[in-house]
Image (cartoon, rainbow over all chains, first blue to last red; front, side):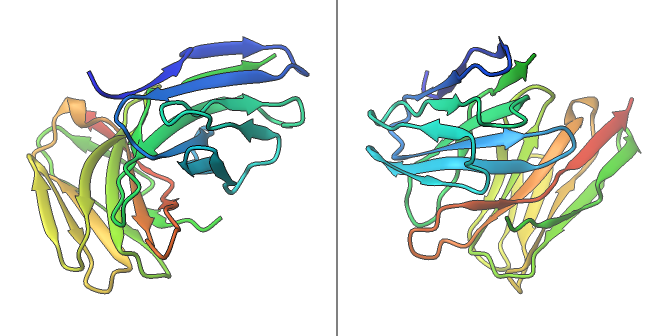
Length: 113
Length: 113
């Protein structure tokens, strides 16, 4: 089946530790995105990548880092510099043409204790 | 970052009733998207709109791309309990390499059986 997978579904970390969230897609999409969602709020863009080995900061990139070494994978690292990391993280991908539709993974809920 | 004005913020209706929600923007969009998010899951695309004035249906759902290109609405007819969730609108400028989506804060729908 084609789709976007995120793992794990739930993740717990101690404060001060870096943590990496996985996102993989087999849709052959060029573009991938990371969003953060907090209760009662919409989706806020952290980072996005339109092509392998290239990525841009979104609206709330501070305290996060990404890499795009393969077309299928776009891992997100939540660093200890992120002041409020507990949130629901969503990965998405799109074909990256002029009229573009983003498709989402199931999300990872990160709780920092 | 920029956000869309999505209303209403929440709705509580009886099963069988019709539902209407809308999004407005101060700027023009070339694409409007409507997503539904179930609790703890990623958003799922419901309808994509690419042309001003376009009216598109997906089962009991109907969405329209406003003629001014600054608004869109989503209607759900004859609601059922599984319609419960949060509905998000998203707009895209598609200017140059800008693939970023601008998101509304969501409409939370509750359906009383």
